Length: 327
Image (cartoon, rainbow, N blue to C red; front, side, top):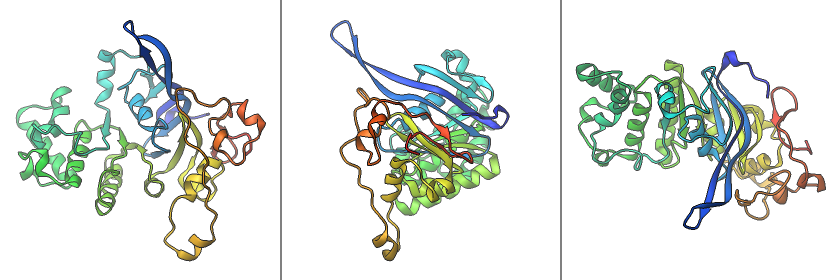
């Protein structure tokens, strides 16, 4: 993929993340889980890149590699022009204040023994960006930014609702004024009514603070609403990447078409007339993925060549990238 480094916040090239499977007393490696199997993409400054796919396809692992919570097996991760993929922990720490993360579970991602104010202020202490009165003022400001009453700073997480806890998580992610935020399914554990509030908040914050998002989700309707571009993952590989509107109006990969056909449409006439694509079989194991195109055992368009040749993610026109030899 050709990308301009000048307008890219993140540039990932040929990223692989394999987790070893070990057995026996000597922990001998017997196999490996190919969580990410050679993917490339970029995230432009001030844009939202949506990353969608089934559970277990490697979305969260991709986000954690970009954050360098995992050391990638191979490949490069350029963050604002610097390759951080091989950095040791002491070298990666200065970059971490420029990255934030919002976790999926607002219940499990907050320390139940700490007050909300301490949780939000922790990143500022770790990076030594504020202390004393200045720290408290910054935490008060963060509470107001995410729509929480600063008078609730002394409460512990169980005294908040799910939506309020996620707002605390967002405030913590914003604490060090990052330029990139990884949103790891930030609304999937929330009520539908609260989901819209959190999405609107994220959009407002992006506009006012100039943020860049990697938005990981499995809800395609939400991704369409918030994303500028969308990457579709299947079994550790990106199979399609294009502008959000283009993906939903003109899906080219058979897997993307199957995903979009599963979205219910609130119009009984259209719902009755459209074709539903039902995928056969189960998602193969990332320990032993199929040869060639990973999707070919479940694909209704597959031919013999699909099981032998790995399709490259190529531009078929207008920045619409597809990994399928039938397109």
